[in-house]
Length: 51
Image 1 (cartoon, rainbow, N blue to C red):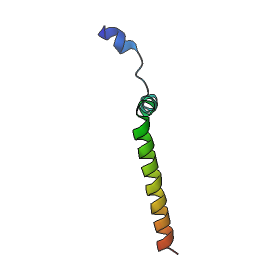
Image 2 (cartoon, one colour):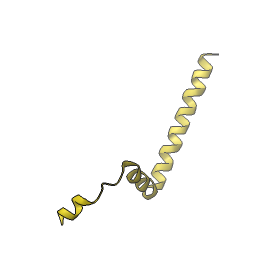
Image 3 (cartoon, helix red, strand yellow):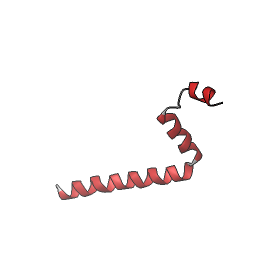
Image 4 (cartoon, rainbow, N blue to C red):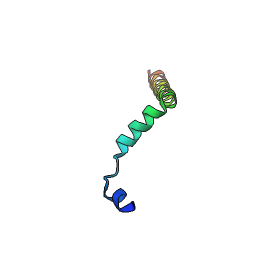
């Protein structure tokens, strides 16, 4: 059984990440929103400091 597993190509990192994102939809959306808000806050903060 291990010989048949070793001949299969390893799934790519992107494919595993996409599958994980679909399975854990709520967590992924939360992290995406938090990242977006954080990035927006940094950009607004830099714009305020450098005006």
